[in-house]
Length: 471
Ligand code: BES
Ligand code: ZN
Ligand code: ZN
Picture 1 (cartoon, rainbow, N blue to C red):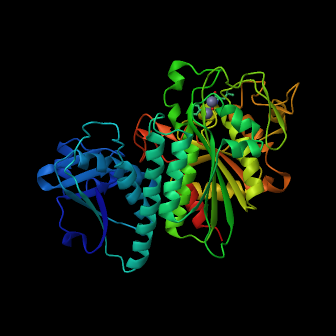
Picture 2 (spheres, protein in one colour):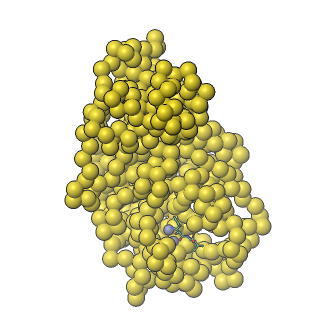
Picture 3 (tube, rainbow, N blue to C red):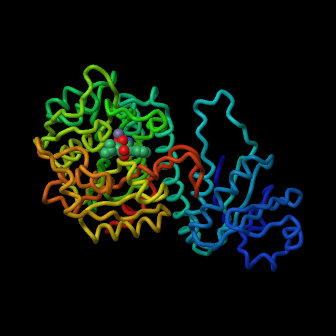
């Protein structure tokens, strides 16, 4: 399916269908009010009424603002794809909703069909976004930027959605190498012997029972004279069985998505390099598979991490933080960054705290939290801060090592996981670091907003918005 921007009056554009967004209070004034009334259309948000003979598709919206338009466009695109029409046009009513329209079409129309022997075929081919704005070059720039970001989001979704027998730490490294080649990025892969030399005892322990070697992937985008340098760290658990603290059968299903943080940071660096932003970006990925076996790491093991901090393992399912501990430590040595952001499907507790639609944001700097929250509302991704405190920090105390990998109490699990990571952030970097828990937002089994079944690409739109605004 194609999406095109056209500079013309709407009625000059020829297409099979004209898409019209309607608010409840516009219903009675609409030219087709009678027939819409007969069809029982009440212009509820995301409800549609397809007048096939007239080639008109109405979709209800609560407002004409980005969030409502994006969700509505996603519903519209699904209706068009299951029709036998070939093309549709949508008027760009204001410049501020261009990205919402692009996201609705590109993200809402996304399908992952790699494993279907007979993917559903659609005759629907083209969407025209129509604008006759005087400032057309600005409209065009917004359109092109939104398209790059939405495509990078789908790139992220594609990798998340791939089955764990296809994506393991080694093949994930191949995906990174391919991206580096295409987008002219630097790419370094540390294999297990390099990880041993680096003394990454925490990360190596997690991957020990897997038949696939662990890998640390480092991608870099280095424009000339960058304004700032950003380090991104992604949790890349290509499968999380829980290890010896084995997950229950039903909780294990979907754990191919435990690599979503890694996929997000790859999507972000892809978008930033295509947008040609003048910010240097480094993406570090801990690619590991958490399995069981005779040589598996165990509850009661004490691991020596790269930073020399010793960690008592009390639960092998709290593995993401062990991998991130070593990757964060390595990343801080490798690059002197202005910002350090990690993305991880880290805790089920984050979902309990915030629901499945909101990413949990943790860190020390109020200013940075504020700037990221702003980028969040601009991007359409929901984020909310989960505050650190000294009482929760004490729950990570270990009787035998420097820190325990699990909290001694069952509450506040997303925050205690964030506080575990904090132990590996150097003093001089405390205010540069933010942790994004995307456990709830990275994957969905029911469509919402412009997300469809599977990986959502959480983090990509948000970070692109943040990086674009860096001064
Ligand atoms: N990968 C999971 C977190 C997760 C859960 C992501 C559900 C997405 C959906 C993580 O490694 C994990 O298992 N965390 C444990 C931590 C606990 C053992 C302290 C959890 O959340 O239960
Ligand atoms: Zn786990
Ligand atoms: Zn995990």
